[in-house]
Image (cartoon, rainbow, N blue to C red; front, top):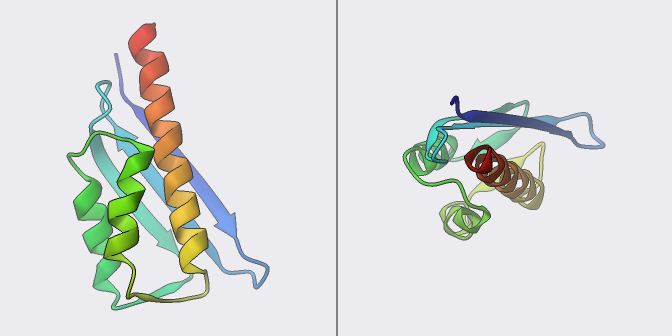
Length: 105
């Protein structure tokens, strides 16, 4: 059985967007994370740190608590911190739910 990949995009009223894609194995371990868009994070390397932190972890919405701490001092421009965290939580939850469905089939 193959794993699951979920991709979501949110566009702000300003026209700026953020796209998050997460891929996980059939046992729900995150193997791929891509966070892109026309927004800025200061310092910019924090986006790489978030992606690196998630890889190898079991997909679960609860991971968002650790990410929230990781980005707590980051300045976002183009999208809000809450929009970023909400989208990431949504994608993590959907990946987790999809893995559970795959495991049952």
